[in-house]
Image (cartoon, rainbow, N blue to C red; front, side):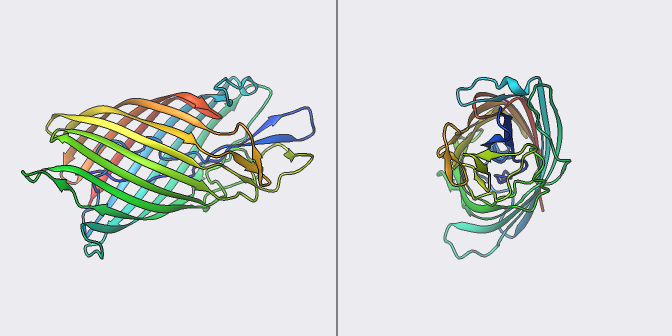
Length: 329
């Protein structure tokens, strides 16, 4: 069946330079954009690539943000009216080894190459400048796909997978631009993906994810930056935990409909020059409907739509459209 994809791809990095009366601007360090917030949904614990098999997964996402929000969830009017449209095309390649040293599980390799484009407008007194589109930071990882647990009839009732990987700072990056395809930093992310089948036509899915960001030693900003009367030498975004969740029901052979969402919470503060940046933790809840069509045994299409609420210290996406194509070979 399906469906596997990873993950936390750093597609853009915002160093929001809020203009101050001083000559410089105080940095606000945001998390890498392009995290796997809702890219995965239905049948997430199932493998796309069976042992000895290769799979390609294509993710195509459009998101429209029209607000930046502060630590209290209030709109930051200095940027309004604003538009931040982002197009992301993630190309994922999976291979699961036929032979495994682990009992009850198969070992696999994962590679994701993102392509990113931007369309921005900021009409307020504060402006952000975007780099042109290009290749984002690649993701490399390895996963352990566990064999399904079955009932007495041999039907799967629970399938899950563990993965660890890194976002590698290979993407296009300009330190004089606020918005870039690449993040100019390494990130480490472990994930646990699972699908539970209360009955054969109904699934409950979740993906628990963690992100640790390493330092960015060349922070991006179109404005001169200052920190405590000195220059900004490096920044480090705080640690994240978040959950993708989904539930779907098979309404007809090969057709599934359901609901999907994600909840993200930053658990440590950002840092500037190794100093803690207070009230900098991000938060967001996204939710919406989804539909999946398995039009052949090796091909699956999934469409998810989201809108966001409970937003803190980040841009608020009024609309996200996410399209996933899975092909097994």
